[in-house]
Image (cartoon, rainbow, N blue to C red; front, side, top):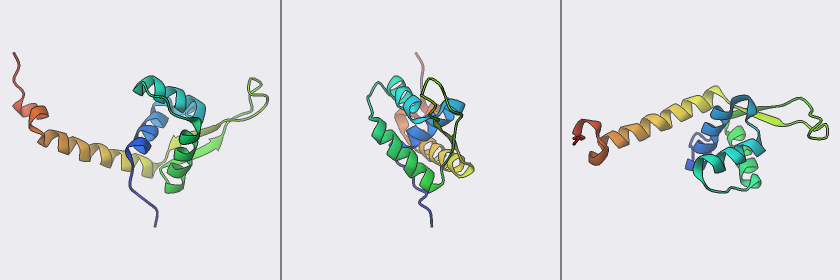
Length: 113
């Protein structure tokens, strides 16, 4: 049976893959993580997380076309699998349910002004 749990860092990486779409390769994900979070992350952490997410069935990957800029090497491009989309949606729904129960952030209890 495949693992269906999603860690916080894994969730962020999955979301970044979705945001980057056709540009979701390890180096670009690393840059986007730093831009979005303000924190540095090693390319090794990104590679191991992408590999783990692919083994769990949350990501799919394919090799892109060779690039002269990269000396003829190809990039591995990632995309979120249908299972990955389900897991992300479940994570979002669970967290939103919790936030709605937290009184200071319950939209029904907010008072303005």
